[in-house]
Image (cartoon, rainbow, N blue to C red; front, side, top):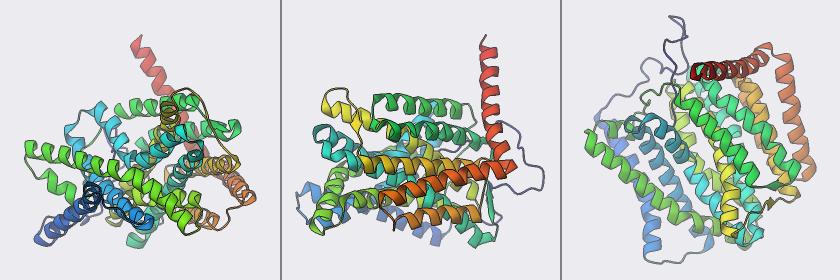
Length: 436
């Protein structure tokens, strides 16, 4: 979880409630019940990868569906462990390194499965559709369910119908806008190549540089395992954090290939389309922990932290994750060459890019209302029932029309988008002037 603070004084007037501040009474207080619950959560998360490590260690062969369940639970538990370790690591890792490292950690569970498909595609092109399926599914789930669930949870808790993001979130939104605009080139070309990797990774690096100039504040822990680790002395805490990273990484490494292959085998065995299993089931296993943590923050009256984390994850997935796919493909193939996309993959990437563009337009004024969240969820959920090419194109066009409508009708969204560009351009000019 990357938490970026402001540059100095707060821009919020005295007496005004800020979305990045917990409501009174929402902070965690240690106690016997909470400590027991926290310990139970940690033990459960550790046992989930452990069962799969044991299965691999003893070379136990399972039916495909049980292999998917065992490996998926391992990835699910490892993702929780990574999120807790990443929270605590922000205290000990130097600022610039922390941003790059934690961004990689954030996409590691999705990255492991997707990179396996991309690597396999370098030797067998029939795996290319699965790499794009996992990538598009993960990105659409993040916005359609993840973002919307934060607003819905906050409304159920407080009856507030709107979440307002901190001004520093313009860093993420601007880079997400850049990546989204470029992503429309991929379906137009019909390929994913090293050129796309260069552009998307350059946007990611720019995001890291911009974020590193913002003040990083001490992480707002979820009142559970992260808080438990923070109460340890410095050396034991660092050792425990490193151990958690290694353990989670081992679990993901051992589970990625069996999980991916198990999904394909399960689809063939039960006559379920493999593309759909990879697109929706695989991201659910890896992204559910992040969604749960975000919902917990929102339920405790801190939706700004929830939305900030999920927006940051979207930037990471839409730049770093996609940018690494052609690199893995070319390394596996042993030569430079594009990943050729079929008609369905082109439609899916176009639809995902259109959804991302609508999301940027909605958040341009740094607010996300209950109505906007509901619309985002309905558009996402309803498209699952219409999978033909015509429907995918219609949904993509609907997203683009809605984005244009939001920017045309809403003055605040229009001004917010212009302010983001102007602010970053002014900062670059000031930096260049200072350098001279």
